[in-house]
Length: 475
Image 1 (cartoon, rainbow, N blue to C red):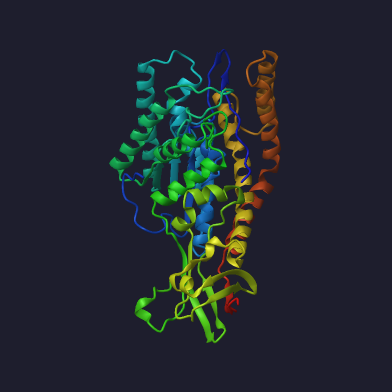
Image 2 (cartoon, rainbow, N blue to C red):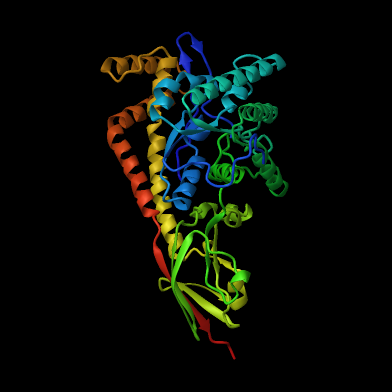
């Protein structure tokens, strides 16, 4: 899923240079989540975080799972990440950015800017005392954020920080040693807070670290992160989403299509589908089936990674079981489209339809994925509006949309350019993007919401006609 990599922002105040990194460094449960969907029908999910959330496709992958797996349970997803945020900065915007969405459930992924920023871009000497202070501040501010969410009745799922990949071989971008250790300490803080508050906890630090180190044994240059070693690429976002699904006990079952058997006790029970019009002949069998879910549409560029992670078996079980067929091979067609051939024994044991890209169910799911990707891209683009409001406030500029407020901030940016301050040209460019997005915000929000409606409609179950035809034996 293409998405913009939010550039580094450094907050500049008159007379001082305050560095602000616009990123956080991207199976254990503090409390065991019950099996089944952790999001409920009608939930309003706010994904709270920093740049890993601001531009992070992980939240879109999670939303796409719920769109395709539970099309009858509406879920409204909102990107509530802002690049550069610490837990304290997230608290500062709570009343005007998070609360107005009225989330019923929130995921919180913070920590990198709280813990690692002083080491990544030090504004003062990095000492053990500084590291200890930052961990204390992170615990206090994250606790305060969790208090605010609890007071508003919001169910919270707490993430660990992600990793900083300091082991990937990349001579052009050498690592800053020690950041990974600090983020591990931040993970421990998140785990402790989740346990104390009985919150579901999703550890992405340890799985990302283990997968990274394992892959780097074969290829020392391998990484799930961009060259800054901080921002996850699409592959890293997919791992984060996979860990969320795994650690919240997401259902692996799309449907279990089981035809009636002469020995009912030996056959599994159909699940999440309705089977009708079963007709057996000497040539094979035909039937209709309406599945209540779709397989997860893994993006083509992530198919190899999904295979390596065992994603299809773990989360995409769309089993077709046809007992009592005479020995031989059978050609499977769905809605007239040829899918595969399988033996009577394979069909009796069950074949996973999600593994065959040509099925109509997969085509429908990928159409939902296209709509969701566009929705998420618009949601990400719109996040520059609260980001820039906070950025202006941090630099003692008005946050309203008046010409006077614009002129004052434009003048400040022009002074930074004149002084040749770092990233001043980037700020001017982003300021232009902010104004364009602000002017188009109404249309962008309407389009975003319409895409969400279309994706929900496109995910609704459809009936399909199945045909299994005996394949003549070769001489």
